[in-house]
Image (cartoon, rainbow over all chains, first blue to last red; front, side, top):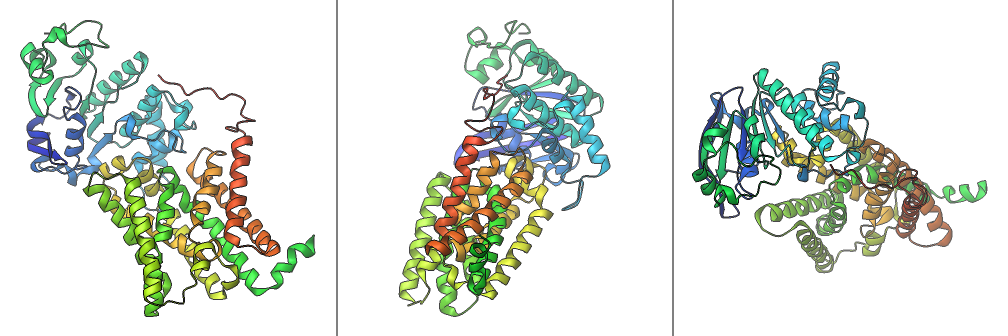
Length: 249
Length: 283
């Protein structure tokens, strides 16, 4: 179980997150939603200790999360990566095994097997020798999902993994989420998507610098909550990729 | 032809300079590749200029100039990282500021301490002054840095590709940064005598950039870069000997010629040779 208590983060003296508290049960698929600038990425980074928190604590099990980093897989936003970096799909996924073999050692046979399996699961094994710059956006996201899988972590924190992906990749990604859930993995996934797609998540965290609501999608996506988060009435929200406008409200 | 090639090598200073040139030709592109992939190519230039105050002080105190240069170079890298993390100032401004300030401090110290440090040789390289001891020092640095790169290849790859991801997985990113900057400083010290600090960035970045246009993986970029760096160094030395001009500019211009050849004729990305230069997929 992931337990976050009273997490407050200031970024260059500006308040980014205020007093965030929530619990994620093991094996839950949780979506993190909110407007641009709501602090979704900041929250994920603060959980991992990548940016300092002014106060609060983050426990995984009964110990601080940052003491158990091998248990956490993190997928950064696609924009944070230089896709012209001279490397291949295989090498990127092999990074997941960095802490599993000693300095200067070649990857173990087990790591090679795990990386191959992870690439197979996301349908990228055929492209394992391809330079990452030659991939489409959806393929790049799948490579990073494979990296998270290959890490064999229990907790996965994914920052906008569905940005710039095609529908085929989206369906594949949700299928993999379901498989990971069945394996008992806990997932917190920030997303900018709207509409029916949110029903795939067991729970949503609605964020705008503070936690506005947590719960099942149908329960928390009320007009009041949306107005609190987005400062808009539901019918004013622009549902750029939604087929059915907010049908669960 | 053979006589033409062998004649310079009959002089001890040329043999020494050639050895140092070859060693820097191998080392610079390996270390420079890490700067390049982080879009920090100019950091090499900054650190090259930043070793000057340390050199001046070490020379004055009669301690090993390698130590002085090393400490000074690493302090400059730490200051840049500190300014970046603590203020809104962007990295290019921080680098420009540190680079000019350290260089200015070095020039002042040389004057104030009445050093007999040969500034010209330091700036542009002077193959006449390369001794046997310099060859050994450069050899030692090359072996040390290459061994460390081999040992920490995966960690350095992770850090330079996805710093946040590396930090999230618990890699000691501050130690990796300091280690990498130490490697850059040592490389600059090793290359100072043949190419000079003003131009060493060209050997750090030039062959590695050329290799970047030819291959698709980091380790291949290092290997091809090292080969090109070595050839550029050797050709530069001969040019320097026969035309009686400083070695640094010769090495740099030959390295640039290789780059232009790759821009035009790289099999995969050359402007004149690549078959299809289709835009990247977007979805």
